[in-house]
View (tube, rainbow, N blue to C red):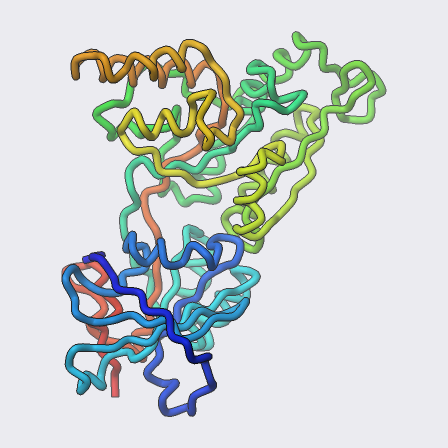
Length: 388
């Protein structure tokens, strides 16, 4: 599954088809907050959307796009495969609530969500869809990216206070349905490179307040917001617009930070805007997902001070030195160096590593399609069979 695809860009513009032909389309619902339409082809290639298998002779031809839809035609080697989808339409929604409504009314045939609440709402509202699960990469971490060059957040003690002020255990119970692990760094406990004994960021608002006071942040004017030299502690929190889980997390983080005297301005943005903010390092804090590979390249890209993809603005001479000398070492020493990098990062808090989510929840229109699973695994779209 998830092989190389051949993308062909059609020169003809998309035109509306009649309802009979439209019935053979497979409509994938997606959120503008979660996915930049410009990244769609990359997600297809990575098998996030399972289109076809390795070495398949089926062609995927892009025949149209707009701000709300991207349309691909499927050309099968056997033109008589009339019981399979003939087009895949990726339809983008402004909010997860509108996507949920489209699923319930059979206007969408396939969708993926991280949200426990969204999945429960769909499951109880329609008999056409049921919750299915697929496992995430073990190192898929949900994290808060701190701008380490921000005039307040450049202090690692301040970042530490913010991290310890978040009640992650309560979030795990109330929002995530316990379908996640608490994180203490970029690699999960399942990784052979994970290092034990790291600070696990336990919820400790008293400690957070004490850290702020030690850094001379106090509520001098008693307005509920701590200040220093006449400057209030006010930061913006960017998150994916319209994505239910991100909205829930952003709200909860704001409440927790408000309780230690930090004023938080929430800023929901679509994915394309979030990408720009990261590249330009034009942000205070952003709630994001990231997969760290168990390689020095993955750490170098994210944490080396001279990396052009170090959007955190993180600078640490010790980490730079470990990365520089890593490739000169024997394999046993390389493992120790990667673990030493994790320990340094854990102490510096360049980001708040929150959770490793276990699963994606996905939905298929079972009234319209059969043969979408095999032994609990999601099959490629091209193998789905249209029901009569």
